[in-house]
Length: 390
Image (cartoon, rainbow, N blue to C red):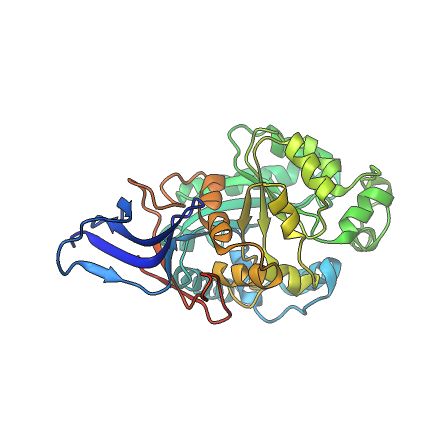
């Protein structure tokens, strides 16, 4: 196949540029050769698209293993209710799990997602990840409420990382959340050489902050139900984020996921304390579980690096970065689509360490998405759709 010349009223480069009436030139392998206005196009070679073109999307937070739970978990039960129900129903026959995650992978491909940061607790998804055209980075997620289990759980994580390496899947070992890992386990994860990037669920519920600030609340009750001794609970008098962040190496790329109850003070503290920070929003999952969204404009005001994730079918009705962007834009119309696309493309690629993806730039191969049905201001509508061009 020869070169392709793609033209649209708007081309979002993925790195914060919005080009009008521009042309994108790709070679036969999908590698960008040129993008801009006034490009000479051989006669009969121009492909025209209404709407906008942008790079393939990067989904920085997903749980492929939970795909079989679609429609099975109640909505708006708060995080402690969600966790309790999830633990009671998550186990299933391997074939059911594999069939569901295969379908989830296909849906993400169709929705223009080219790379995924995926949380995993075992190797059930590795075969699919190894064969998928989507690039996967597996975040091997560890839980250990008490220090006595830290060695065992950490060694299990090392074994799973070895299996990922054998399957030729990129991976790193990460903590689940500040309330579900002991200081000893977090220390072991943080001391592991060349273990990057890192990811952690952050301030997804107010109960997480209450646990650290006051030593009380629904999260305390949940952990008590799991048999954890109250004497081991973390209590610092500060927010969750301000209590644990210093325990994670400040130069390692770190994704804070959800941030539903993160304050402007927390953002300022974190940006000063950590040199390589990214903030991930999964708004549809936040609505599904907590019934509220993070204060996303506060992150825009602070000019921090944001990314977008879908979370899982256990907490979402679809795996679509476009639908997540719609949710953000509907709630916060002051946030421009160009900004959201930078989050969904360049920022995600930067976090996952994928220099060939994320933007339309000479020599890169980011994939191409066609966004249809924009309004007169080049913003999303409820009718907006995405189609993967290549």
